[in-house]
Amino acid sequence: MAYKPAFTDKMQEELAYRKKRDRITYEQATKKIALVLENPLR
Image 1 (cartoon, rainbow, N blue to C red):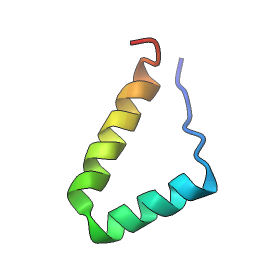
Image 2 (image 1 turned 120 degrees about the horizontal axis):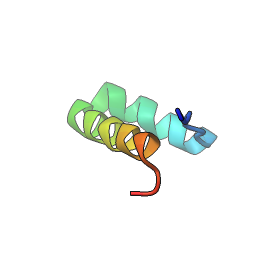
Image 3 (image 1 turned 180 degrees about the vertical axis):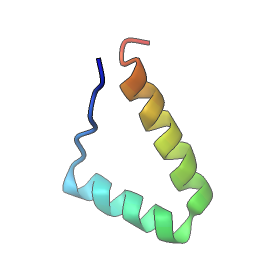
């Protein structure tokens, strides 16, 4: 079963900021989000 992320407005703003200013942190965060969505019970 595939899950979709649901972010608050604040989280969307933070990710957009990180994508522009801090690419490494953005990539780490998106990888972790993908892992949680893949298996949320782990």
